[in-house]
Image 1 (cartoon, rainbow, N blue to C red):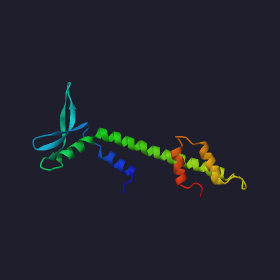
Image 2 (tube, rainbow, N blue to C red):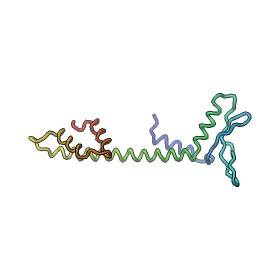
Image 3 (cartoon, one colour):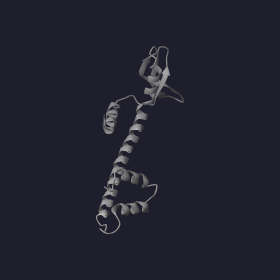
Amino acid sequence: MTSPVSAIEAIEKAMEGVTPGPWVAHERKSYFGVFAQSIGRGFVSAGRLVAAFAKPHTDAKANAQYLAACSPDRMREVLSLARQAEALQRENAEFAKSVLDVLNAVRDYLPPDGISAKEFLSRVIGAVDNDGINPLIKKLERADVDA
C-alpha cells in the first residue's frame, strides 16, 4: 500500500505543467470533453480541450465529469487539506506521547502502600475529563496504560 505522503507527492508531481483550471465537462457530437474554462469579457466558455472520451463507451460521460471534478485547482485544495491532516496526526501523536510520559513519570512516585497506579491514573483522568482530552483518554485506555 502506498503511504499517504507518497501518494500526495505523486499527485503533486503529476500536476506539474497541467493545464490550469477550473475544468468543465461538456457534451459534443461524438465525445464528452473536458475543457479548461475560459473567462472572457463578461462570459465563461469552454476553452482549451484537456481530454476527450468517445461516446460509444458507456462510461465516457462519467469519466469526463470525474476528470473535470479533479481539475488542478480542486486537487491543490484536496492536497492542502491532506497535508493539514498529516500535520494534525503528527501533533496528536506527539501530544499523546507527552501525556503518556507524564502519566508514567507520575506513576514512579506512587507510594507503595497507597492507592494503586490504576486508581491514581483514574483520578488524574477524572480530573481532566473534558471534550478536549476525552478522545485522547480513550486512545490511552485502549493502549492499556495500566500495563
